[in-house]
Image 1 (cartoon, rainbow, N blue to C red):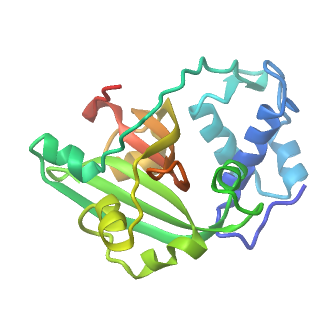
Image 2 (image 1 turned 180 degrees about the horizontal axis):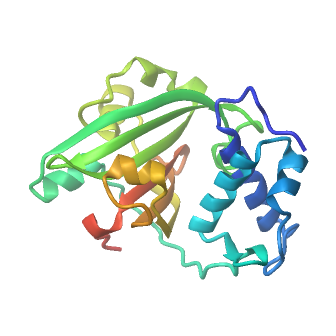
Length: 241
């Protein structure tokens, strides 16, 4: 099995998706010990550092569990409850409702290959190009949320020419381009621990609980628009469902 070394998606993220897929398709069974770091390194032709980061993040997300002196095992699945989000608010609107000042900063913008859930939801070909944009949102200057959005490249290429360091993206999509982000076909909320990367961005200790939201955004007709994967500081945010 070979990962895409020329892809803009980091190798550890590709490996995470491969292991997750193996779990979801039951190639790796619940309670089963997964291959060791050296074995995974050889299987996927990547360094042990890459393997270690992928495995550690999957442990943080609850897909795997390490047992001292025994190895790494597939964790028992989490109980899942569907949350239907009918009306989606932009983060700037949330801040306004709380009498807070919203600000935002773009961290990254690049082209990546679609992962399975993304191309399935968006109706694209496997591995189709997406525009990946990462931004961090602040309320009264305090970092609250890291937003990771994945847009079909051909439809949303115009975003590369937009200044997204200010204002509401949802409002701009609606008012300037006629794209009305109305809700989500599905929203998955999990609790994860802050990795060193996200702890630094959100100014929290490593291991701090974060909300991890997978949002599959649709317009007022139910047409798939884009996918959002957001990390929100649990101690700074309350969700009403």
